Image (cartoon, rainbow, N blue to C red; front, side, top):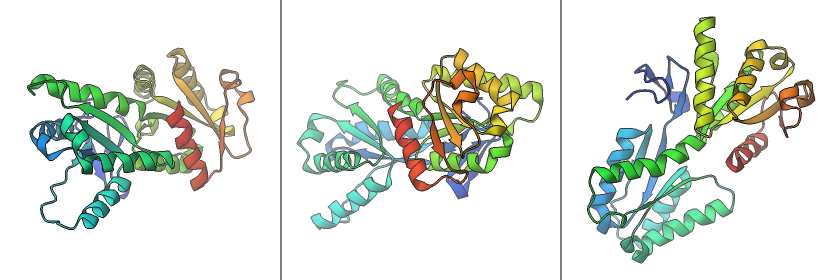
Length: 282
């Protein structure tokens, strides 16, 4: 499979973060799993969804065939534990699904978790949209999933002096199903500048978030300011994140009027959760 961003085949699996990293452009792809809620009567259509996800995205679908279980309590407990552990929830909507007690319980449980603050990437696919499922259906499935993936992309801009903070944020974001690109892998200055500008433009068109880590180091970094300028020229969604007490948004005219989130140099769990909530609302 090729990198979405640069089409490179230089993808490497990183066990520690359960992610794929493109060694050519620096993209980090979290290996997350889809929970696919469906009626067993629709299994042929659902298989097309599963195959399309496997062939198109860096994610793996989870389908359940529970013939080995007969105890209803045991089945419900297993499904709830699996739903809780997932970040992606795909509801295969159909007349069969709406009549299925199990499917409706799954959707109800997922909505309850969302209401209590758990983050999900929710996708609804209408299985009754086409009477016959063929190539059109695969295109439809991709069209339903891709916008959600695009909204979950982050461009991470920071000074090399703030790498420890950036790495902690990157790992937390990827663990929560967000795809992160950062320019740290670029080594040749001219190539680096061109690729960074291209990635900023690409992310802006895809409704991603430009996360600017503000510190005395990034405020004094010409590269960071250039990245910020490029993001604003593309009308990107810019989210300033203040590291510690050393800098304020007022020191940089481009973001002086933006509301910023303040975090510690070693971000706490509460700070990361707040960041995820802000990104989810953007």
